[in-house]
Image (cartoon, rainbow, N blue to C red; front, side, top):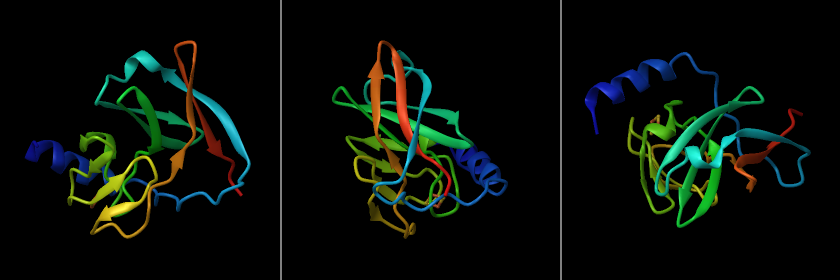
Amino acid sequence: MSQLRRAKNLVKSSFRPPSPDRAPTGTAANAVTLGTASSVNEGGMAAFKAEDREIAVAKVGGTYYAFNDICTHRRCSLSDGELDDTTLTCICHGSRFDISTGDVLRGPAQRPLEVYPVRVEGDELRVDVPRPS
Ligand code: FES
């Protein structure tokens, strides 16, 4: 991983608001279109903005996973990280998350990722983003 990319991500992270905690189940949600499914390559990730959130989408084994792009540790962009199956490693300090559940697999992050239901309609990526409470 590039030291320059990591440094840029750390600087950007200092200007981001705190990432939300995992949404409680049963929370009302807005269905939003992020972009095209073809913009996410197999084994890759892409970042989108929707509903005042930065949302990353990964494609692993033909399945799409959507989650908050902002690391719960110090707010680096997770879509700049490294993906191995459904394990995502943050580029900044090495926290690991399971993008299928949002669970923290390794610190220093303590809080899980917010994950969102995602589906493909035509070539559109649609996610259900919790409404602010
Ligand atoms: S910002 Fe992700 S591990 Fe520190």
